[in-house]
Length: 320
Ligand code: COA
Image (tube, rainbow, N blue to C red; front, side, top):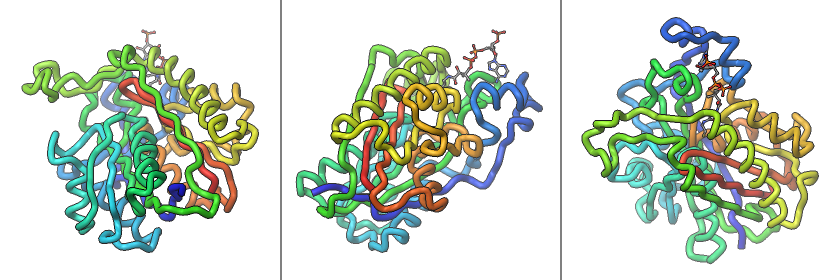
């Protein structure tokens, strides 16, 4: 028995912030941001919008696209590191608001790798036979945690949510291999210090701190490693990949790795120019757009790979 994606949905907030908008308040330029990151604009949620508000919309779209009812869900997992509250989890809020009365629900915290961690976890419940229908969401509103005066961080992030519905299937398609990794020793390179039990009063602030160069080095190393590892686990090679959907953090990271792997541009999905780094939402948002763009056909081999704070990395390979 394998987990198969039977529906997807995504959403981003309506407010667009362009590079030129940022250049009005900080010492940066559209040219600098585009050449260093590939990002042209990002979506920023308003004060009234919390992560669950986006997650619920993405979930409802995914349920419609999968043609299943919320009551038929056995489990909801949300990859997020910007929950509405420390508890209840975003997953429990989604469970209530969409009416998934019998579903268990929890959040998976692996930052930008959160969707792949959540997806791999969901697959274990299906492969073991415990559950049949699972909703997996990646949702984050990290723009609420950037210092808009810190030009090395605020240019990178955007908000969004993406969701998929998984069901048990034995027709040969579905998610064939999973690979997860954590390098906690490098965790200090990407930190949100305030608000946790180490600093509940947020004396250290509630902003993202990042060593961009070190995170960049980690990202190129593990993105490559994850793609090799997950294809090997599926008894395939990189040449068998029809579409790679990498975490949408920086086009230089993606270009560097895909060039090294010999993957042509048309086999790599990139939409970060429109959204920036939407953290756990980036991969399901890109997958949903790739499906709308008709980039996938039956039988295609698709690899999803994400990396982020922790530091973490996770990849899943599926036959569409
Ligand atoms: N606009 C203009 N100049 C900027 C700038 C900005 N937005 N941000 C930084 N700079 C400046 C720096 O101050 C530095 O100036 P200096 O040489 O006078 O000190 C110069 O540009 C080079 O900075 P540097 O940090 O070396 O740039 P970089 O090429 O490493 O690019 C990142 C910075 C953040 C774009 C890059 O390191 C990166 O993308 N890292 C990965 C981050 C990531 O993906 N994080 C999320 C992972 S999930």
